[in-house]
Image 1: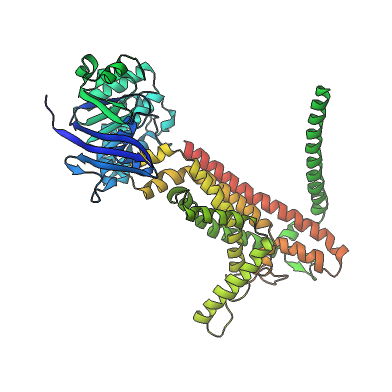
Image 2: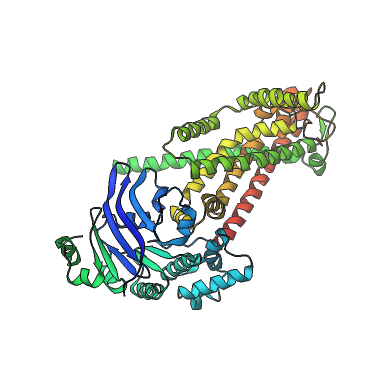
Length: 254
Length: 297
């Protein structure tokens, strides 16, 4: 059951201008595990997630100290190609955000911008394969040229997952991917996460503790920018070591 | 008492609206009634004759359309590039952005005659003369008023409109789309050209529409930069002068030997100018609507 460490975070502090959002975070995220990050709003879990593919670079004044390693390579070093990093570390956002293009074009976008395909036929294969991986193929195979906006919320989110899978990432970061969805769509996403972890390393931020308990192998609890506790999910939810963790999961605050 | 005030206020707003509508109706009605009197196929297809007291205005229509087209071809791409810099690359809190943005806003408020003088001083005297000195020593080729310099001057005048409109449209594209694109390993350039710009085309067209509307109506910028009182032939080269509808109206109303005799022609010219501006706008609006349908499909 022991899995290799895929992402190592060492002594990481994160600042928005003068505002410190993460304090000395140390953690190892295991390959082909689902790692859930829980904690109250504003605790830094989303900041932490976005630090893993350097999406925070887009925010003026954002700054990171410490090391974040992907397969032992520091992703914040100057030699790191951010574009390449983001191809390897995909991201699913809280609000499903398919491009206002056809379903096909949404999935084809990543392979196209990364120059991964030579012929149109190859692209067709990738689109079908990834839509199948995202459990969406049967629902959309007859209307690939229709606008992605015509899909339901849950379908849109699965399309975003397919779009992320199309560039063959190694890690998938999910920022509350099901928080805007109904229970049936949520169940489908969770089922999908379960399927995907065979191939991908998944880090998921969630407000929903049942969800964290259902889908994840390990869980980290964030509070006020600190990683209070990180352990096997079963242990976090049944026998947490820190009293803050216990207070949070038993619903005493947050 | 409060009810009376309330009703009076409603009546006041209504009255103001009616007054505005009446003014527009009078202006347009007057131009329509008097302008269509002498309007004929010949009028829009023939050249002026007998010192503008007979004949048509085709050279002026041709010149105006050409001016607006060259202006758009210059102002729109250039304006879009500036808007891309403003909306996508410049940091809004940076000094450079704030100063250039303010400069663009101010440029939009500069009186059009100043642009005319600028065009004369910069494009003709400096660039045109400079080109002549290097390319055609001893000859006057580009260092004189011509359609190309008039179009350039008009492009500078309309540039702020394009920049401001396009920048606002690009800023309205949700951040989520940019993030999604970047998270897939797209570069910023790819994100701009594949995600942001395609969604901004309607805004680009709006900018073009506003620029065309302004460009077709302004006279002052072309006064010193290329518009001619009368030309026997249509311009066929970039360095030739041209006739312009707005300038033609000005010329006929101030420099005609017989003001009364020119009046019907004057009315018809104004009518044609209005119709032309309307048609140019309509074309741009139709293109924009096509783009909207296409991009939302």
